[in-house]
Image (cartoon, rainbow, N blue to C red; front, side):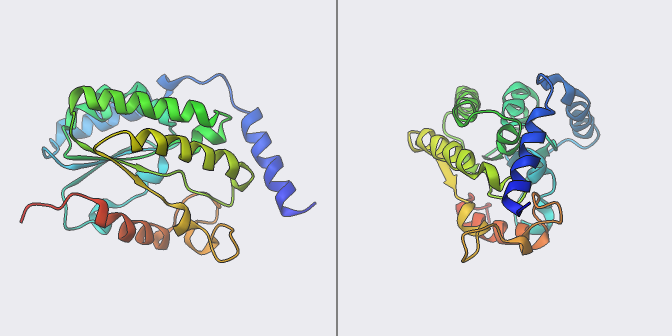
Length: 220
């Protein structure tokens, strides 16, 4: 059995195993973030990173020591979860810039690219209701070894979200695909963990260096 077929079977198994989706399962994670905020009130007008495990694993103090940044990712979540919990993981912080990475788990769970776009559009609508001019950065869904069989859906979802971002005066599209693929057009295993899905330290360094010019400068 070749590698491509094995990867496809793994993806099929992942989708088939998915139970009817319930965003409230993340309630304990959100409660922990809120408890953390009560214990140590977060700074106002920080750069907010929100989304799934790729955000959770992003050590912002290490890779962006020059800025005030908040990590409010909750691992394993979908983009639709950030919409569901918007009032608790985005709205309270009044961030000066919001960086979003999610959608990876949506696609992995069998959600269509169109549904990913719709989730992003709804999240952006909520943000614009509260902060009409805040900068919003979409960190595009990354190609990975584990989900390579879904690359067409990943690319379609990113393209659809990019169309939404293009209509927003303060939206920014950060394309991760050129960073993730090698000369052979396949995911670079040297920037991924052994699971073939999550970034390792080299991957985060690469992303951080590429993202930095798109971030609003801190006051001197």
